[in-house]
Amino acid sequence: MDNASNNNTFMENLEYELNARNIPFHQDGNQIHCFPHVINITCQTIITELKWNNMCSIEPPPMSIPPTNDELTCWNAYLEALKQDLIGKCWNIVASCCSSGQHQQALLLKIEEGNKTGYWKVLELYIAIHDFLLDLGQSDVLDSLALSELQKSILQDIHQVLQVAHLTQELLSAEWTPTLSMALPVFETLILKWKMLAATIPELKHFIDLGILKLEEYVSQTRKTWLYALAMILNPGQKFSWFNENDPTGEDEKNA
Image 1 (cartoon, rainbow, N blue to C red):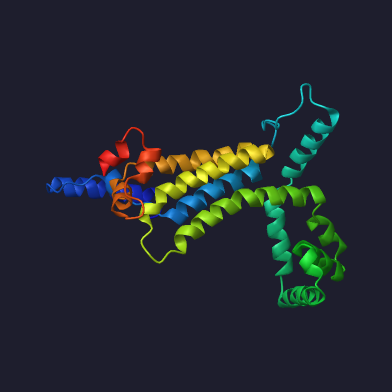
Image 2 (tube, rainbow, N blue to C red; image 1 turned 180 degrees about the horizontal axis):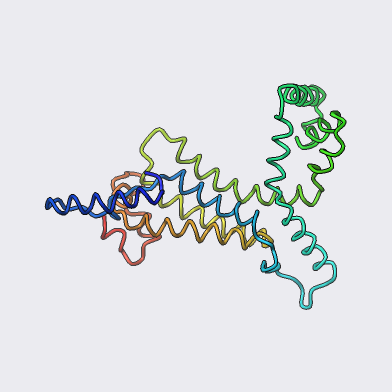
């Protein structure tokens, strides 16, 4: 089930009703969280922070001691760009391109022309969108939606962070066999990958850490459900291997 609070309330009441009838049941041990919903909530935590944080409390990435003028200038420029709600700006660009059937057809034609000439093989799609807006003669719209090189670079950084989560969700969603046994290992892998990205893109460490914190909340809840551990033990390709590497206390194995 998904992670809405009403489902938690449902499980609490189900536990009460079953125990009242002398049927052993524990809400934590039998609640399986929806994997895509957990990933979505985690990503939304990052996106929301990117939108609403005023950036005043964000710690700078590692710098020289003392920091050079160039380092401080680059960091301040990065912060100023983050304040522009870049993801929201991308949504506005998409909305402008899709605002009418005429716009959609014009953009499609621009892309097809670029594909025929090989233009887009070496240039990013944003240039097609830029040219499309330019052709409309709407300079005011273009000015409000145009992305600077720094903004595009930051969006690529943000894309890396969210792409990791997207790939983990696809990994489980694309399987045709039961994937419950893979949930905990994939959660742990996502946390590990995000920690690596926090070191690689220190400018976004604050936001990545919030995503990790939210995901760890669900991992903690997931560990209470013995079905995950049992599914791993019954999976011939896993058995006890994950426990040996990630459960030194033996608590998850014991619960299963």
